[in-house]
Length: 275
Ligand SMILES: *[C@@H]1O[C@H](CO)[C@@H](O)[C@H](O)[C@H]1NC(C)=O
Ligand SMILES: *[C@@H]1O[C@H](CO)[C@@H](O)[C@H](O)[C@H]1NC(C)=O
Ligand SMILES: *[C@@H]1O[C@H](CO)[C@@H](O)[C@H](O)[C@H]1NC(C)=O
Ligand SMILES: *[C@@H]1O[C@H](CO)[C@@H](O)[C@H](O)[C@H]1NC(C)=O
Ligand SMILES: *[C@@H]1O[C@H](CO)[C@@H](O)[C@H](O)[C@H]1NC(C)=O
Ligand SMILES: *[C@@H]1O[C@H](CO)[C@@H](O)[C@H](O)[C@H]1NC(C)=O
Ligand SMILES: *[C@@H]1O[C@H](CO)[C@@H](O)[C@H](O)[C@H]1NC(C)=O
Ligand SMILES: *[C@@H]1O[C@H](CO)[C@@H](O)[C@H](O)[C@H]1NC(C)=O
Image 1: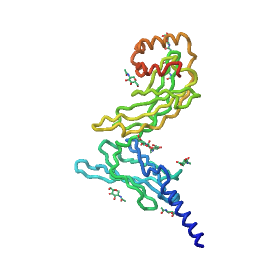
Image 2 (image 1 turned 135 degrees about the horizontal axis):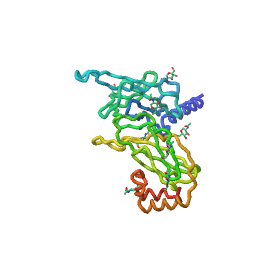
Image 3 (image 1 turned 90 degrees about the horizontal axis):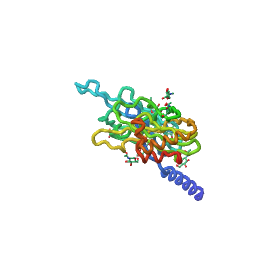
């Protein structure tokens, strides 16, 4: 009997230990699109899988700015079923757009009505993660490949300067082998001959914050856009010669549209041998 009881205790103690020290539990973390949408994930072993858990967030907005009258807005969302202790949901403030001076008094998690975690003074500007760009459009002609894209959803008016990163690879390569080209524009011009065969491209975006004392580490890259595949025209010796001329001329013969390719170190990474 004593042995059975100790075994039972041992099992209970062990599972409590395993649950509490499960590696990598990060608690509540929230990123936002700087418009009105906050995506929160909660990684915790503190609540049973059956607990009814919600994220609640408070904002205040002036309803009469002159009078200084503030209205409290509280939004909530139900944390979806967990995968591996991680649950997530989106808080959307229909009546309030974020701005630089926004400070949310709290964002918290409640399970079965009990508070589990409380983030105080959440500043949306310090946790931006934009929505990914839409599917890239590729227009490949004998002379050049033009890759362009649109925002996945309308970005905040306060985000004036954006940085895009494109990854281009051949279909059989992995994304780790892709070349990376960065641009502030929503398009990329690549001269013919630099890309060969069956290629794939995807794009992501991040804001460049220009506020005083703002920090580039505040923002995260968006997720990658969907991928577009295309096939380039066969490289001809004529194309190759023109490419070499462009390289020697530092890309200037094509004018300013080839911005990204004017940097010679970028050009060498883009050479036909490597891609
Ligand atoms: C909020 O953002 C998430 C992803 O970040 C997206 O899946 C969801 O559709 C957005 N909701 C609204 C109402 O925009
Ligand atoms: C919450 O309630 C559910 C169902 O009533 C119960 O199974 C669960 O154990 C409760 N969880 C917590 C953390 O109290
Ligand atoms: C759960 O997490 C562990 C360790 O982090 C990981 O190895 C495993 O693949 C995850 N399982 C699922 C279904 O995500
Ligand atoms: C969460 O933090 C805020 C700000 O400090 C506080 O007003 C609020 O009472 C806290 N919530 C709970 C449930 O403790
Ligand atoms: C592709 O580029 C050509 C030449 O610049 C243009 O005439 C055509 O409309 C473009 N097609 C698309 C789908 O953008
Ligand atoms: C491609 O380049 C050649 C030579 O520079 C030029 O004659 C031709 O018009 C160009 N074609 C297109 C579709 O731009
Ligand atoms: C955002 O970036 C920070 C710092 O680079 C990182 O620790 C965090 O995991 C990222 N969050 C998401 C949701 O990608
Ligand atoms: C070219 O790109 C490299 C690496 O991205 C960078 O270090 C260098 O400053 C750039 N040069 C010019 C002239 O823009």
